[in-house]
Length: 172
Image (cartoon, rainbow, N blue to C red; front, top):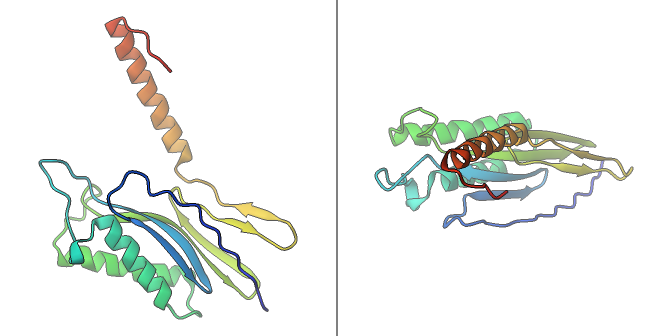
C-alpha cells in the first residue's frame, strides 16, 4: 500500500550552546529527539564524549544514525533497542556511573509508517500528531505535563511562603 507522508517541524533551539535535539526523516522512520546531558556545575564540568559532543548530543546523534541505517523491515522497538544498547556501551567505555544524575539520555517520539499502519514510541515530552486522509487526527500525550504542573505548583507555594515570611507581596 502506498502512503504519503508530510513532515513539518517547528523548532526553536532555546538558549543552549549545543544542538542536543535530533530529527529523523528516513522513510519509513520519522522522529524527533531532545537530548539531555548529565547534571553539571562550575565545580563539576560537563562531560564530553567523542568529538567533543555533550551527552545530549551524543545520544541524539547516535540514535539518528541507528534509525537512518536501520533495515526498513525492523520493528520500531528493536531499532530503538539497538540505539539504547549503543548509548549504554558508550557510557560503559567512558566509565560513566550508571546513576540518573550521571547519564546522558533523550526524550523522543519516533514513528514508523508502513503498510497502512503507524507505529509510535514516545518517551517524555516529545509528541506525535498523526493526520489521516479520512480527516481523523491523533495526538500523543505529553507524558511529563502532569509532573511539570505539580512541580510548578510546589515551587509557587514555596515562593509564596518565603514571600509571606519576608512580608513581601509576590507578583504572579
